[in-house]
Structure formats: structure tokens, C-alpha cells
Length: 404
Image (cartoon, rainbow, N blue to C red; front, side, top):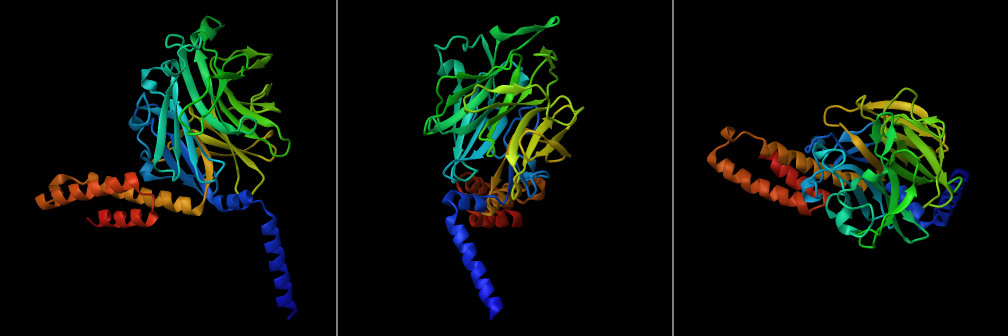
């Protein structure tokens, strides 16, 4: 009897504690089941596409769709290629946002003038808008087609003061170049805009952070302990001296009391000593912990590197994650998703993989009747992939395709 009474008291206490939690906190607990990594895979048009991978621990990932794209770049980007996808959940808990560089690297590193905005409710089917800066801001001095040469690595964060999402990105302009020895280095600076409510347009760019030398790949997170905004960025370009500090294309840190700055940089690198160059840093909280992971792309070494921190200031090396097989990520980002969202993505991936396998089956192995049947089945499968996010429907279709 005493045991039953004790259990009832404990259960009541638990219910009271849950009732006291803010609704958003309860929802967040349900969403934190695993990790979704959005990335592109290499410097080719085939590689400059959005890909997904899943992880249970935030460190080791398995690609979805056999490593093939989840969204085709030629359907969303003016350049028909994308880089640096940043994905996050909206404040309502049900909407997802993704922003990325609208760029095709085989046209040159100084050939990019815009970015892509995307919005979704299921992580699979996306509203998209490409923003070309010279076209969108024709009267903005220095942002014309001849002078502007880079709009890189956009990310978003909610701006409480403005009541809007703030998008921030690196800008490179020819009139900002500076000498390093007998060479000239593009001087990248971080700018920001605010996004409209429909997530289809942005306001005029404003300066967010000028490091004094080239800085790219900004990633901002608010420190819940101090209330400060922490900006992670890469010191870009040719090694030089900045305020007595030797730049070496590493991850650095700056802080501000306001989201829009001013940011004060710390003149030190955060990555594991000896790993150069690195870029594309992204910070995310570990599920079930108060710690954070800082990950970045060791693109010259062929792996992603992960470090861990409890204070967003001091980071300890955890592991290198090799990039091989179907998982070859370049500059991407990670967010938490729920078990239901994972199930939806895995069901979509099952159908996508089955469809790809059937598409690749050699015609000589099929009868004429089977060739006609395959054509009709593939059309139905593609339509299902393009329009459905219901796991049951996706898996039923995958079973039919797999049995063909």
C-alpha cells in the first residue's frame, strides 16, 4: 500500500511539473528526437544540390535517398546550383526555413550575386524564391553587377526587436580588395537584412560585422546563460596580420549584446590546432544535454570535425567524421527533428531509392509489356514523391515499386 501511495505521489508531482512547463518547451521536448543534416557535397553541378543525412548522436550520420539530392537545384536557383544550405525550424514549431548560396562554382568564385529563400511545412516540398542582389537593389551603391562578386553562406535567426527573421550573409565587392604582399584579397564583410512575412523577399542590406580583413560563413547563436549573441565566423583568404593576430582560415568568435551588433571579435581560433584550412562552422545544441557541438568543414583534409562545449566559448575536440561513400558533406547545418518527422523523411527516402533503382533497371531485362508498365508506375511514383508527405502513402508506393 505504501509503495502504491508513493508512486501516486510521484506521478502527481510529475504531472504538476509538466503542467508548469511553457507549451513551447513541451513541444520542443517532442521535437528533439534526432538530428537532420542539410548539406551540399562537392564543387560540381551534380554536387551543388541539397542533400540530407540523419543522426542519433549528432556526430555520425547516414545519408537519405542514397546520398542523392532531396531538392534539385535547377528548380530553385538562378545559377542552377546551390551551396551552404542552412536549415532551421520556425518559431511556430511547424514551419521550416532553408536559405542557401545561389552559386555555381565552375563559373568562378567571383560569379555569385544572390541567395535562395525556402519555406516548407514537411521538409520535403518547398516554396522557393531566388534573390538576385543587383536586380533587387538596383540603386544601392556598390552592389551593381560589375562590382559585387559574392553573396555567400546566408543564415537566419529571429530578431525579437524587429519582430522578423533576420538573414545574414557574407558580401564580397571588388572595391573592397586589399593588398597581401603582391596579391589582392577580396575583403568580405557580413551584412544583414530582414525577411518579409511570406519569406519571399528581403530588406536592403546593412553592415553587420567588419573584421578588418576578410570574414565569411557567419553563424549566430544566443547564449542562454549570458544573454549574449555569439557570432562564429571564418577568417577568410590569404594569411595576413589583423590586429596583431595571424589569420589562417580558421573558425573564430565574436560577441554582442544586441543581435545586430556591434560585435567584438576574439583573436583566437576555435578548431583543433593544426587543422587548416576550415570553413562553414555550425553550432547546435546536443539533445538531452546543455552542451553544444561546433562542427566545421575540413575541406582540404576530407572530413568534418566536431568539437564540444558547455559555454559556447571553450571547445574540446570530439572526432573527425570521414566523408566518403554516399555521405560527402560540405558546408551545411544541423537541426533537431521529431520521431514523426524522421519517419516521414525515411518513408520518402524509401520511395525515392526504390524509384531510382527501377529507373536504372536495364531495358533488355524487361519485356515490352513490362517497359510500358514501368513507365506508368514510375510516373505515379514521381507524382507521389512530388506531392505527398504521408509516410503510409509513401511506403505503400515504395512497396509497389520494389515488387516490380
